[in-house]
Image (cartoon, rainbow, N blue to C red):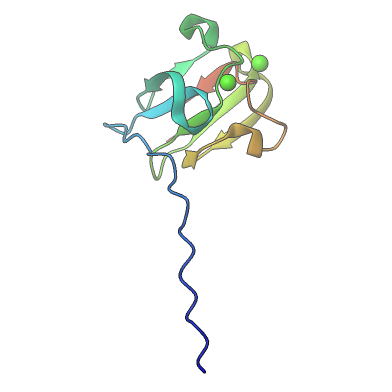
Length: 110
Ligand SMILES: [Ca+2]
Ligand SMILES: [Ca+2]
């Protein structure tokens, strides 16, 4: 007797990915692009995320294909830094536990 063909396991549907326009890089308060957010255009940088009310708050981000942002542990581009690319559902997956840690963003390297 033939064995029944296993039914494919449904792939969990990922959170919908917002589609930023004009090569904007967007940053979100919570993982999976939830909570408060703001976007930057290429060439923009933020030396102190307190100006956005988002110091040590960012938990997910979308950087458009082909672009890179550098993020910093402290304001004025001090401390540890890492370059982010692509769709990042949860920053805590990154080195140095970047979740709720970013204080400055440089989107001028592109
Ligand atoms: Ca957060
Ligand atoms: Ca910080």
